[in-house]
Amino acid sequence: MRTARVGYGGALHEATPAAEGRVRLADGRVVDEGEPLWLPPFEARTIFALALNYGDHAAELAAKSSAEQAGFLQAQRAEPIVFIKAANTLVGHRGLTRRPADGEFMHYECELAVVIGRQGKRIKRERAIDHVAGYTVANDYAIRNFLEPYYRPNLRVKSRDGCTALGPWLVPRDEVPDPMALHLSTHVNGRLVQEGHTRDMIHDVASLIEYLSGFMTLSPGDVILTGTPKGSVDVQPGDEVVCEVEGLGRLHNRLVADWVPEPERAA
Image 1 (tube, rainbow, N blue to C red):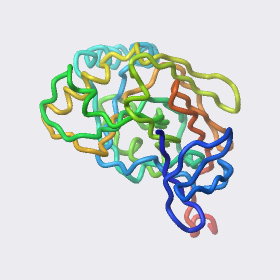
Image 2 (tube, rainbow, N blue to C red; image 1 turned 90 degrees about the horizontal axis):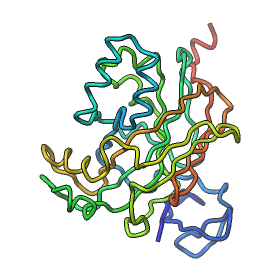
Image 3 (spheres, rainbow, N blue to C red; image 1 turned 45 degrees about the vertical axis):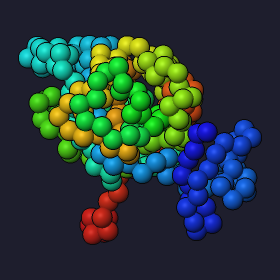
């Protein structure tokens, strides 16, 4: 059964799907989807994020890059490009994400998120999926001008408060027969702007688990954001972004303007 974590009536609840547009709390109450505060559907431990794990997205960025940067992008296909994100980045379904005032181009990244459920190290590819608890949808925003040049560390852009939405559901592994057979899409204000398919990953789910566990222990609650396909469109405050992964649900997120400290507002 797919589950969510929500805040309602001053308490934290586990929730499950009810009728269309409604959710059932663990105590049996059924409420409209818009009533609770949605949290990430599990307590995240280490957050791994993949860069350029779809060939079409890597080509999309390479076409906009210098020859030196394009060569760097191409060379990285041989081994996953992985970085760590901080827990402060996470928001749940229907959460708000701030666009930084100095961001020149900010875009969504619809991704399949893989949640580890069983500890392991040096996990063989053929047994990798046995260590998965389930899957959810991620929207891992990027601010493109903060990421260039591509050898710059991703800390400033990828660990910003609230810039990674997760949810709405944690879908058990057994409900997803093949994580490499899922369609992904993103709509901004109702307009389709991104489509892709997990079969087009350069490094698939099993190989990512094998790679990461080859040098560190993976533990329950670790999550792997597996990258995004092409289709980058600049988003602005007020935009409603909906990321969907086939069979996992639709993750809603809204952009708001940057927060400005009180003294700066007064000035």
